[in-house]
Amino acid sequence: MADRAGFEGFYRARQAGLIRACTLVTLDPSSAEDVAAEAFARLWARWGAIQDEDHAGGYVYKTAMRLCVRRARRLRHEPLGLGDRPGRDHLEPLLIRVDVFRAMRSLPLRQRQAVVLRDWAGYETHRVAAMLGMRESTVRVHLARGRAALRTALKVEEEERS
Amino acid sequence: MIDERDERLAELLDEAVRDLQPTPASERVLHRGSWRRGIRLAATFGTVAVFVAGSVLAATIVRSNPVSHPGSSTVPFSAPEAPWVFDYPTGWNVATRISASPDLIANSLVTTVANGSIPLHDDYGPNSSHNATTLFGSSGAVVLVERFWSHASPFGAGDWGPGPFSADAQNPGWTFRERARCEGTLCFHVLEWLGPEITNSDRMAAAKVADSVQLGAIGRWTETDGERTTLHDENNLFTVTYPADWFPSEEPINTWVSSPFEILALATYSLRPGGEAVTDFQLPSNAIADLGPNDILIWINESGDAKGFPPRPQRFEPSTPCEDWTKLCPEPDGRAFGIPGIRGWWLGFGDAERGFYAFVGMGEQAFSDPARAQLAWDVLDSLQFLPR
Image 1: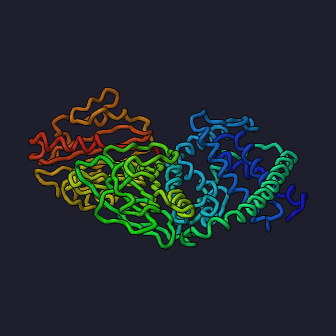
Image 2 (image 1 turned 90 degrees about the vertical axis):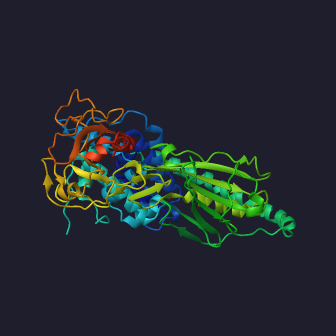
Image 3 (image 1 turned 180 degrees about the horizontal axis):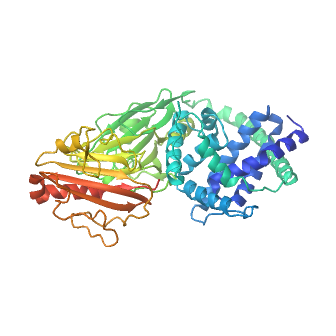
């Protein structure tokens, strides 16, 4: 995977997703765009060593999560950055964003990252562990706590699972 | 099952960010990446050049002073008596020591990792003893993971460090640096403590150990000084300190109500879960039936956010005033519930953006002994909550 076209295709396909993931961690859409751009730049700098799209995805998310933490720590005392008003005619999406951002803000960063990578981005727990540099068991703990806190804050009943 | 993806949460998160429309800027990214690649290539060439030159020079110097290498792999540390986990080099030693005492205000629990043997009975630590070289040798590498005594510890504080290396005033040539880690209700310090002749590889290995320390996968954890026990509940994000001979229930004593949900049942006697509801407040009858004349029961339930609850009072007491919220105002004489032989109080309060109902029950003998009765209110005062 050493071609520019390949990178650009990957970038177009994954840019929005990575920015949204970073937004859920930093809780600031404009910072998330910066962080995602930097992560993609670092990916491009190593593009020749990237084996496949899966590898690229893991690399760019791992890099972005590291950058997100730094950015989120700087932003933790700032007001929530909610980004542009949603393009729909009603305010509901913005209100959801406010609720979700407030709930996410109450989570420690590791819990935030674990929930975003596992539940929102859909990465398996072992891949989340690799991205965050922690053991799977630790990821599970962060996930359990993060989910419990989010469910309570967002008033989500736990799903029944067989 | 925790390994399954939580689809409903995923959907909510997605709704929150779905409308964000990023600006495509692949040219900017490509430019920034190309620049980075150039810098990296230059750095690589520079590093190789420096390495080759350095190797030639080092080969002539180092032959008479071989460097010891740490184990090529690491092993994970976890122990039931310690709340932290970390990785340490194969061949290094680990020991955990609990040195709790009512007189201690710090360092009641320490895990030591060292590149040599670890003394079991000596006191040691940077700036606190002058025996470092005797105990660990001049090339000693020691990492100390210390739990600060809970009654004096910061709660919910942030991480800091590692700071710069400082000279150990008690041990000439030894240096140390420290960092604090706080996760959930637990804060602990990690110290790297290095001898004057430590090798670079052991120095790096000690730093790696310190970097890897993190809170283990624990739900509840207690620490005691023999007189008081502090319970940390990482699932429900609170701590409470109580007399060491009291009994926290390991499982909910109310087995049929899930909202509000029980986060703590604590008593001077061993609690039996279950039974039937006593009064409208769903007190479990087994716990009430077992409450003797000199016993005390504390039962705390959580109910969503703090909306509708009065703020937590500065001190809990039977006459806690209820100016804005009268529904569960505690009766000073504790007779409101009409349970024969038991004085009882319900208190509602908000803390850390969470809402709580607390029940305090005690037998007539405990109620008539002010010092004993006060224990119940002291336990409530010791509660510390983190936001969920």
